[in-house]
Image (cartoon, rainbow, N blue to C red; front, side):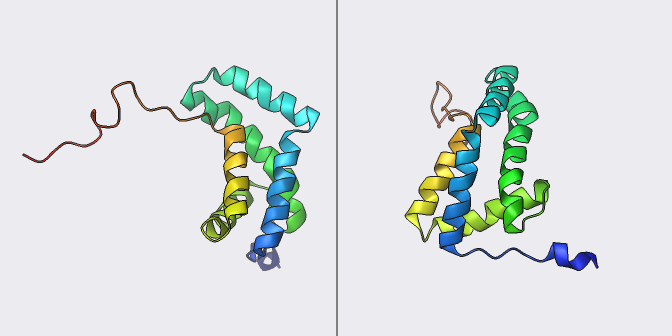
Length: 126
């Protein structure tokens, strides 16, 4: 019966903190740090290439940790974990902080265009 693997994974906020900390720690393991550095080098700070090279490696590293907690070992498992973490962020500052640290490990810092947010984004009604 395949339905057992489709069951949603329920983690408490405390368990989510533990898993987040383990995922962050996994990124600092020497072999994973090398994999991430190589992916970043291949991406050359280009957002499209970040999605092509860095995100898949980051996803694999997360999968290795979260599968031990009942999440499927695929992209869907990572998305479910991310949604679970997001659901706790508003109520738990520590989870929000850990989530921010995790994102910073594989997402480049976002910079505003040189003209600022007013250029091109929204057009005033006339």
